[in-house]
Amino acid sequence: MKKTIYIFLAAACLASCDSFLDEPMKGDYSTGTMYSSAEQAELAVNGIYNAAAYSINLWKFGDVASDDAVKGGNAGDQADIGYIDELNVQSDNGAVAEFWQNTYETISRANNAIAGIEASSIDESVKTELIGQAKFLRAYSYFQLVNIFGEVPLKLEPQSTVENVHVDLSPVDVIYGQIEDDLTDALALPVSYTSETGRVTRGAAYGLLAKVQLYQEKYSDALTNISNLKSLGIYDLEGNYADLFKLGEDGTSNGNSIESIFAIFFLSDQVPAVGNELNQWFAPSAEGGYYFNAPTQDWLDCFDETTVAGEEDPRIDVSIGREGVEWFEEGPFQSSWAPATNYLVKKHNQPLSEVDAGRKGDGGLAYIYLRYADILLMEAECQNELNHPELAAEPLNLVRGRAGLTSVPETTGQTEMRDYIRTERRRELGFEFHRFFDQQRWGEASSRYYFPIPQTELDSNLGISQD
Image 1: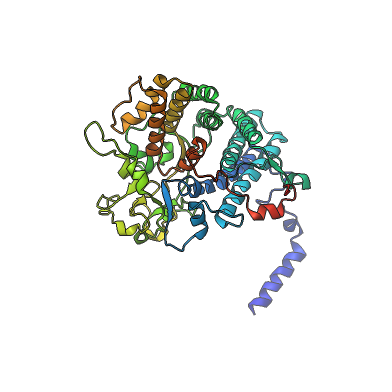
Image 2: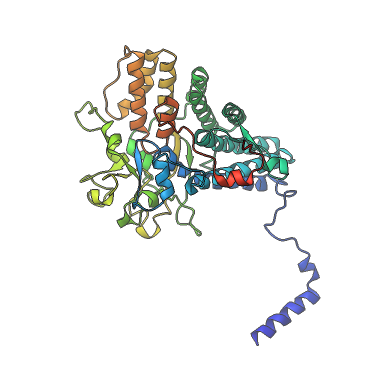
């Protein structure tokens, strides 16, 4: 009987509701109408941020491929991450292919937004701001790709033609050149936003541009952009190192810290869930976690100095969980939680009072990719490599001073200063996914400098020469 009623109602509607059927579908935007208003153009840019959130998986390369961590987890779980740990990666590695595909998804969305907004008739100031955000996120994505894979296809247009889909590999210096061009354009971004957090700012563009130039050993150029960032007068070291990796008392994101320059923000308790998954990757199994990315004893051993007060460096227990030390406010950490190395990453984790075991993959912490301490350490490195170790001492000592360590004398020679700076980067930025790339550029990593291009790309991209 119900079926008959439904058919009758449908027939009646077809007979008498022509005007209703002629209404355009709500929320359906074609490429021709998507950028007809600033609001719709902003939605397109928001989609780039959404895709860029996948970049928190950088830990699989920045930490696991380095000497700071091993795969962790159960011995047979996520074998492809284990191959990354061993630097024994083949082109069919699923974890590598997933990172490639998701990073190019971010780039594809950025390319679509840039082309659509450039061709639109929206207000020029709004256009410049939205394109600046898109270009920053494209540059950020290519920076990860070029550091992991080396030569990659440089795609800068919407994937609407055969030529734009099938693109050959570009040399590393060409990719870096495009990254710098995009970030230079992004310098037109606002210094801050009045009503929103999480959007890319001019400071982020200065900071990432400096990092990109440091990686190319363009030390003077990097110092210029570091100076420009500092002249904005809005960044500083957080008073308490631990506060960088926890929500504020009123629930505000750690991404809003005075030290945060560029962060990937997350919002928990949404339907469907869109929170930070690092909790689940790194937490112990008793809390619903998978205990991956296990810190090594070698990382712990790099803390060979005590503070001025004769105590251990406080960054150790902010960064990792270890036997007998309080794990948030849930009792002492047990090494049995971490069968691979006896340690687990504490950064990126939240207490059960904030994210319970049943929803451990729905965290609210931001992943801070670039912060002021990193900028200070980059400044110190650039000054030292330009043979000015006396000028490297001040920014280096600001970072050391927060941790309670003694100051490095300005009279320290270049070689010794280099060791101080490199060790300090390892301590300060531990488990923030930078270590392997530092080792690469310093020539400290193993002989495998780049990971292989995924076979899925080699099979589908006919533009890649396979001589």
